[in-house]
Image 1 (spheres, helix red, strand yellow):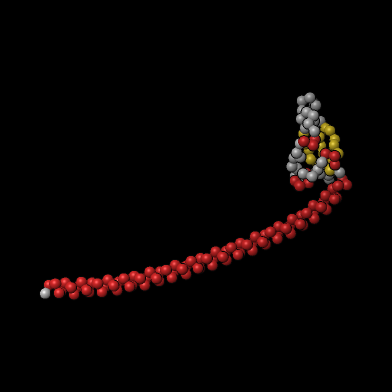
Image 2 (image 1 turned 45 degrees about the vertical axis):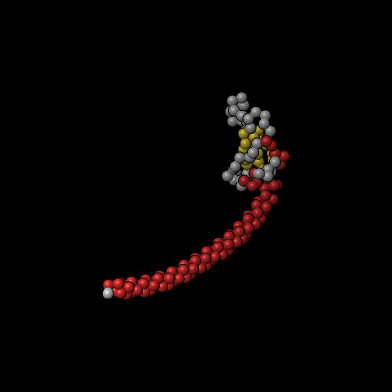
Length: 147
């Protein structure tokens, strides 16, 4: 099919402007959202008896508007592509900075923990030395007591 078409079924006498356009594989969604009933031509067709099934109204884009739509679509795609590339670049830069910040925080935290470990080791060594002195003092006092 050379023209793009969107088909919609209407039940009863419901107006075309009140129903949303269904998705069609040949027409991107942003095109169908801008279509108004006044810009379309209609042809009423019926496959079975009109009383048993609702009639189908077929909307076709005017051929004069398809060239403009095609050009605007390609410009929009280019804008979207460049916008997406910029967004991805910004996202990657933010992620890179966040990862760098996280790594630096981790290095700083490890350095803090190593300093705390050294302080605890020094305190342990001091306490062991005090304990050894107290043990020696207890031995001396016991010897004095036994004499």
